[in-house]
Image 1 (cartoon, rainbow, N blue to C red):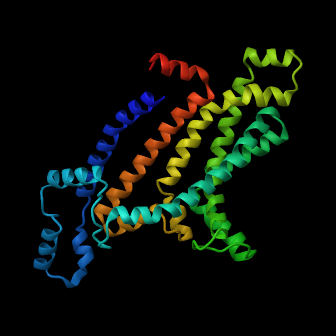
Image 2 (cartoon, one colour; image 1 turned 180 degrees about the horizontal axis):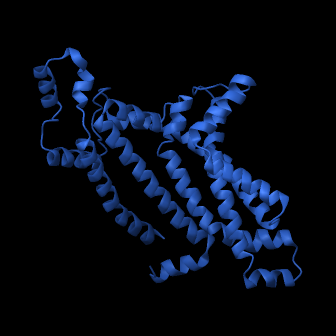
Image 3 (cartoon, rainbow, N blue to C red; image 1 turned 180 degrees about the vertical axis):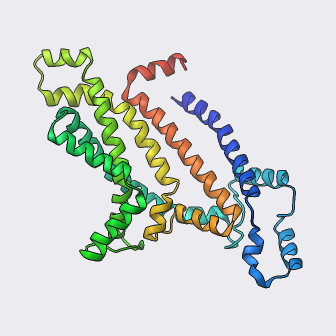
Length: 312
């Protein structure tokens, strides 16, 4: 298990480096001067050039890239141009808010998605199946900003059950968690349904039924465990994506998380802050994939055997 994890980490290193290189080139191609935006129209060209020199922004692109890369390896992501604070500190201060939102949304998606998928598979082509699949399709299809505004209007402005925005306590997490969780729950429900239907066609399921086992025992003990293997991948990747920054949701609900930091960095062309945010998000996605691979081996003993035998 440890050797497998180390191999996956080694494979992920080029991905991280390639992401930083691509991001660095794209940020330098986009028109606009972050120093000019910071100083605004009152500063002269001489002052702007002097500030650029002090920030080492007039160095060649390759020099600035390797300075950023070597600093990132040591945990130093640079200093925000606009806020004049370490990027690492800004991200770590904002991450707990994103973590709370992501875990809450993941809990909503799992609690809704997995039972809905199982019930739809068990009651295939029934009214219940059509209802759950239609509801999940609506969640997947509806844009997050639209569902967020709709829930804000109904539950915050009309019914006044929940606050419109902010992040000052547990009740402020409910609406954004439902918005993010609904979309993820739709994916999980549909995948759980299709995977469980596929597993229930196998011979060992028919054998379990022939032995006289109750249907609920057949599903819970034999079918569901194998059906959840592909679902685990989506669940791990979804959590990693949510942790990397739910940009739209955090912006609409005024949550000071990693996604909101990224939006502010884009608006101010704060390259160190944006580079650090994207690198942090990429690392979380890679970590999510690694966790999914490890969970595979827990759910399926055949994968453990392949890992021990060195089969790739």
